[in-house]
Image (cartoon, rainbow, N blue to C red; front, side, top):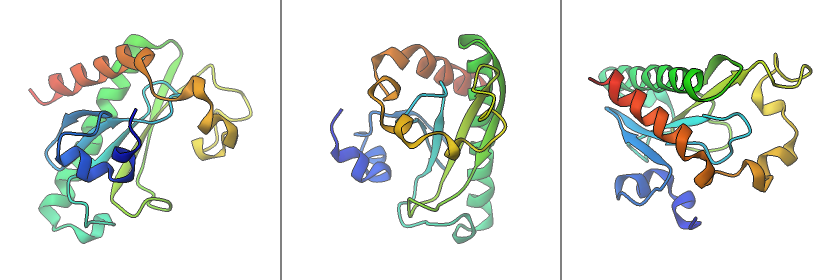
Length: 157
């Protein structure tokens, strides 16, 4: 995958150049995560690159973003139940500690996760896992990506 789109995730999504985009939603873009050590990890990106925080949006856009986050969370949950064994739940997070644009993380959690990590925040997984080639987004993740997209389509009518 080309590196440039990662340097401008929202701009590349707006231009139709972000290959991680699964669907355009009301207030942003549903994208598949760069790492897939928890299959189905997805992110909701705002569609306004100037917005850093949820509180910067007018209330109607704020609510639209939160509805999109809920919709993506439910789509990930449905897809993971269908495609991956051992699905437990979905965790939703709006953090903003590393990237200076509004986005929400949708983390599926599984029964097969290591016992010492399954109840902890995903961010406590070993750093080396975040860069391992076997977890990097690739063609092998197409079935999960397609399943999430299908569920988003069902949820949006």
